[in-house]
Amino acid sequence: MDFLSFFTPEVLAANWTEVASNRIPYLGEGLFPAAKKAGLDLSWLKGEKGLPISLMPSAFDAQATYRDRLGVEKLETEMPFFREGFKIKEKDRQELLRASEIGDRYAQAVIARVFDDNAQLIEGAMVVPERMRMSLLFPVGGDMGIAIKANGVDYTYDYDQAVNGTRPWKSTNYFALTGDSLWSSTATADPFADIDNAKERIGEKTGTDLKYAIMNRYTFNLMVKINAVKNRFMTTAGLAIAHLTPNELGKVVEDTEEMRVIVYDRQFKDESGTAHKFVPNGYVALVPEGKLGNTWFGTTPEEADGKNTILVQTGISLTTVDIPHPVNKNIIASEIVLPSYERMNEVALLKVV
Image (cartoon, rainbow, N blue to C red; front, side):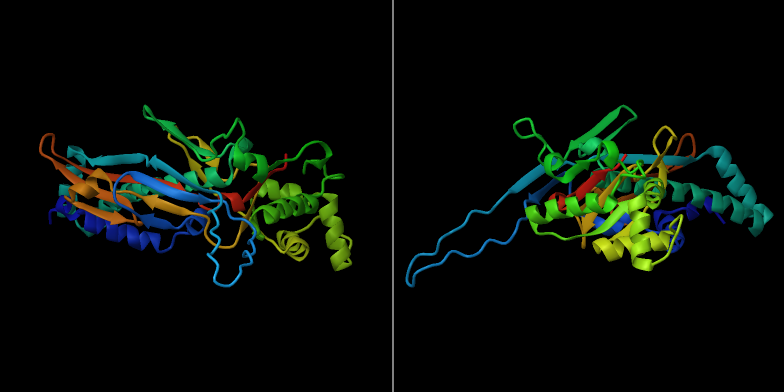
């Protein structure tokens, strides 16, 4: 058997589909579901959702009064491109030839290694949109945008462009605590008051009810230690307790604020190999029900060419290229991807430390 010819895009994609059937989805995949479009250009409407405005009274047989469409801003940009691959080199080819002579056990090990390399490429492609989505949901310092700089390429996108020197989203949806209100001040902090304030501000502005509080384990553990939180549990449960369990804290927040706590602690490595949390320490995103935007995938050059290419995960192109000299087979993953964030004005962010 020619094992090298076995590694087609269809076979690699089928193997990934089997592997992916057991993967835990990223949180952002639900909040910003995947969508596909042609080309590079992306445009979307950032709506300024507000409280419903009562219809104007009218006399019979009179012309209708026409209202303006409030606060709709069209944003246009070009989506960024990502591509990386690995090679089945001439020495690898010799191992594949040897595997065909030795038998299935050795062959399976060699094939599995190629499949693992392929899976790493696809997983790396899936990190990119989650990194973007979480950058929008948790803009450090309140400056909402996406910045990925590596390999001589700078992809920077500003989702909250200043108007007359003021960033609209940051000025109304970002709440940076100070002094005794910081959640590190266990004796004086009051997370319920902080959440109430943000919910009220967003509710007054958009009419939206915030339903989920998303944070990482570090921030969650800060909240557990705060006296106001423990006291609230003792009030509702009638028990004296020194430390709340995750389930107990979740029940307190749900009973008090009608919000569900989501602890999201997954990590990724950037292009230099440095590990990062998707959700930064000391931040809490308060979000409503439903999707917040879309994760848009464009048409990659490989997909447009259509040769030896297949799509996985909505918009990741998987391509194989045979190189005659030196004799290599290249396996390449590529994507053009960028999230839209139509409901950004309905999301609040607390900076609690």
